[in-house]
Length: 274
Ligand SMILES: Cc1cc2nc3c(=O)[nH]c(=O)nc-3n(C[C@H](O)[C@H](O)[C@H](O)COP(=O)(O)OP(=O)(O)OC[C@H]3O[C@@H](n4cnc5c(N)ncnc54)[C@H](O)[C@@H]3O)c2cc1C
Ligand code: FES
Image 1 (tube, protein in one colour):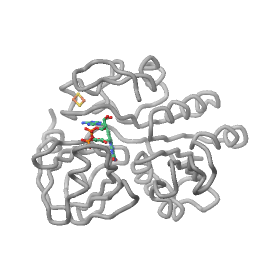
Image 2 (tube, rainbow, N blue to C red):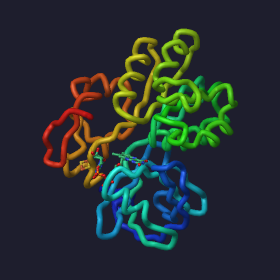
Image 3 (cartoon, helix red, strand yellow):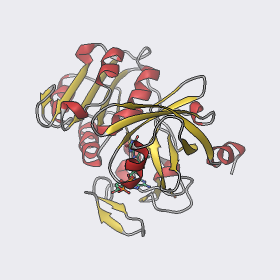
Image 4 (cartoon, helix red, strand yellow):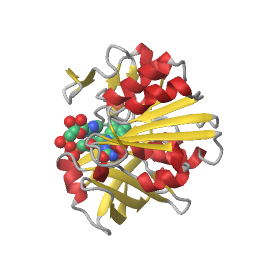
């Protein structure tokens, strides 16, 4: 292991600085961590909630003064415990881990769903001023769950942000992938970045393949060690924590038997994706 990886994997404790409510189920937590403040878009960290668990989270933003933010959806025991924590309470951090998105500056399409919008927003902040064109399609079940829409609209000109909700409470009433079919028939893109529920990623992948556009997708799998040792995040010959979480279309083609279909449970058994 390199000095960089040893430093990244060392657990650091730090107080929560701020907690912001983004939606009824998502909160953004900000804390200081020198290592993770150097992270690139797409990388993730392991956040330890003392006495409860340690969970993988994508990095939402970093600041030069060492501040780092993550957006966390309450889904189970660990995220519920984190949601009940307040500023000044202590958490533990390891990371940053994994690879990052390749930063391209041509005509860019980003497709994000749920908290998958977080790493794409981080990427958009880095590339928005340099791209020829940036179109951001974001989807959620309802308006209340549509994350960071104001920040994304401030980054892209308004006409380049397409919001979709499943109940029609904001934007177009459909899944995030629906507007893509027409858009890709009419417009040319040099790169597609996507992050969110895996069934959405698979649909975006199929459309990018059809239109021969390079794609990078960020995947989620169960993670424990985050450094390629335990095997809980395996997909095909890859370990998502070490070889991902960002995968190219070439790599996704290799793991077609599992991508969008199966994952491993905590016992290493292959189970269907819900
Ligand atoms: C690379 C990566 C980045 C992620 N980024 C974010 C993010 O930015 N924001 C966010 O809200 N969530 C993110 N997640 C998902 C987050 O890690 C899980 O929601 C969290 O671990 C759930 O823990 P829990 O105890 O609250 O729920 P549980 O009740 O334990 O589990 C609920 C579901 O969460 C998933 N999960 C549970 N434990 C893990 C684990 N150790 N690793 C991966 N998935 C797990 C499983 O699908 C499980 O069915 C990310 C996951 C990965 C792998
Ligand atoms: S989480 Fe242990 S190998 Fe990836």
